[in-house]
Amino acid sequence: MEPGLAPGRSTLGERTWPAKTVGTPVLARGMGMQDDSGMTTSVRGVIARAKGEPVEVTTVLVPDPGPGEARVRVQACGVCHTDLHYREGGIGEDFPYLLGHEAAGVVDAVGAGVTGVAPGDFVILNWRAVCGQCRACKRGRPWYCFATHNAAQKMTLEDGTPLSPALGIGAFAEQTLVAAGQCTKVDPAVPPEVAGLLGCGVMAGLGAAINTGGVTRGDSVAVIGCGGVGDAAVLGAYLAGAHTIIAVDVDPRKLEWARQFGATHVINSREADRSAAAARSSPPGTATACQNATSPCSRGST
Ligand SMILES: NC(=O)c1ccc[n+]([C@@H]2O[C@H](COP(=O)([O-])OP(=O)(O)OC[C@H]3O[C@@H](n4cnc5c(N)ncnc54)[C@H](O)[C@@H]3O)[C@@H](O)[C@H]2O)c1
Ligand SMILES: [Zn+2]
Ligand SMILES: [Zn+2]
Image (cartoon, rainbow, N blue to C red; front, side, top):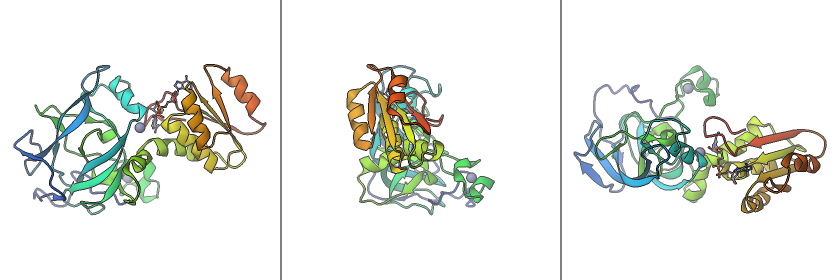
């Protein structure tokens, strides 16, 4: 992935470049303008206006992309539990939030200086663009990047109220504005509802099992909470060659799905003492637990 230019780091000075676009977006001149070209795209999006209140579908104004930014036509967005945490005030108090962050879509327009993606590219959205320039990036460890960024411009409500996009994405909307480096180009043959899951749940769950948990061949693993992240952790443990994979949940449907992803044992913790049951199911040796029933995105799920 080639990160786009960081907003404010363009060498293009004050010069205003028109965004490269594809298709015919619904353009609303003169509405809530914040961008250089004075144009915004009016779309429908799902916002959380205040803590604990029902979410609502409303009009969102998306600025034309400025330097280093991309506007993406969202094709699919998963419902990650973290969106619920946002609504409940568990992530912050920066309401209103534009929810949604587990998405894939097609780049609609890019701003000046963007070379990594172009209009028409099919992309997965990721939380933050790495800079590609800092010491961590130069050492090949972009996950420790000191200067990650999101879009510099704000999407707004029709009255100009700035929105806080969930995890810097805000993809429960027909279109969203991100830093171009948040777009990872992938094979357009993949259905968007599948590709989008890689942007959060799959990345978090597989990463928890394989990278953070370090599951290896022959290990015993317990995954507590088998939703989007948990099932990816089950799958990650399976791919890593774990011998015993114990899926724990309170919902029998989730336990059945966990079996399909590779769980060798399932425990409904409403019905069983899960510690005792897990101990009975687990052979002697390494035990890794992936707990993901409660911790929000970006705070770690293991
Ligand atoms: N760190 C990250 O990168 C990251 C990424 C995505 C999600 N998350 C967080 O991980 C958590 C799970 O997210 P998700 O999208 O998979 O949620 P989800 O709602 O799809 O899954 C949660 C699962 O936990 C189960 N559960 C609830 N209470 C339980 C209990 N007491 N014992 C066992 N199981 C229980 C539910 O039945 C459900 O199957 C959330 O807190 C989310 O915010 C973290
Ligand atoms: Zn998420
Ligand atoms: Zn960096």
